[in-house]
Length: 250
Image (cartoon, rainbow, N blue to C red; front, side, top):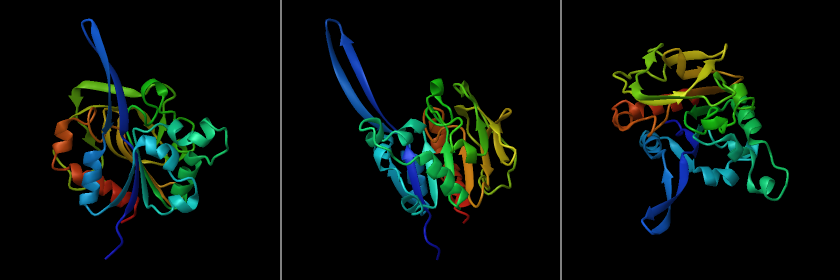
């Protein structure tokens, strides 16, 4: 029996601070949220050993050395901006040098590791281009080229994917796909393989840079672009397990 896939999942968390005004009076509220719960549960239920780092934890705890990163077979970046990985406290606050974790990720993939980037407001290029992965070492190993500007395609009416290669292991056995409410636009890399798309834009694409593998899923793993119908879809767990297995060469 093979060892379980060891997967590091970074991102999919946020904090909200709101002001409630009720006539003369007002008060403030703060709340914390995580958006990757269903995807992480699907992977764990499928036997994947998932280490989860919410964005605020990943800022300082994401691996900084090859030895730390090589403990994992696959890394998932989902709705976490490049700045979170580039600017740990020791650099942005104390002006100390630190390793470039985007370069570390690129080296990890070329050395045999797997990387999945999931879409959102702070991956790819993201809202107001704040994802900031354009021209980074990570873009260099993705199966797509990123836009320089805000790359969101909001689809409030709902949009369904077209499966281009139904035989590819990442989508094997998946039928009756649900609708989505948006995605990040990008351009297929010449060395990449297109698996699924929205119109003329990649949804799922894969690539084998160096000895490793990379993949993108340009929509969301959950709300808001991935609506409740997607999370409840019977193919939802299989999709993420398929992708994890392909990235880990299982």
